[in-house]
Image 1: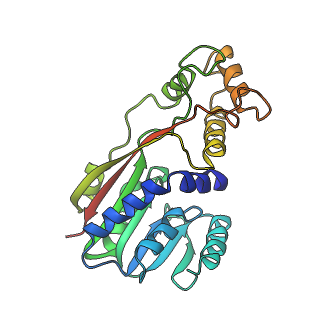
Image 2: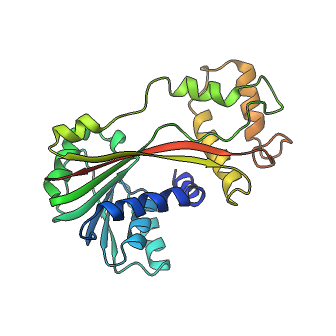
Length: 259
């Protein structure tokens, strides 16, 4: 998971930069105290610390291993004086973090057992006028052409239809119930073509491997065999050897303010 998160940050860096710039436009004054909920390896933490050069950023995560990786990264980038990690299980309650100007929750809120309670904690932790930004992936990134040269066309579409049959999550009503006033809801579309970031093939392989781990007995045998061939690093059809990759996904951000 750590590798996947870091590849995601590398390949989708432009999208992340666009998002943090937008939050800068919405923030008045510029945030000085930022909290990253479910920070993982710190993709958002680092991006926020870079965007808001005077801010202190607190990364909250349940995993000490993830926080250790973040601490090493922050030190390497010269950000150790402004980035700190707090180990906490948000399902057990809100940690004592003090008052914040901006709370960021990227692809983490849907993992919580009781997201409404977490949002209530974020509301209480924000200063009046403070901003909450919740980002979710509308669908897992797609990389392959319709015809991969092996098996039946439409393999990747069938994979996604099998694993994600329902609509994307919408946090609007949850935010309103928690007391927030909606500022904006904005999709960030990603459509990368050649020349692609150098890590794209490894990112595609990591994403497809994660999907494959959930697919046993859910797809026909010929589809599973074709996907396994594409994931095989030594195969001539391997995702690592292809020149027809693209990156397509959409992420939506809800920006809401504590009145």
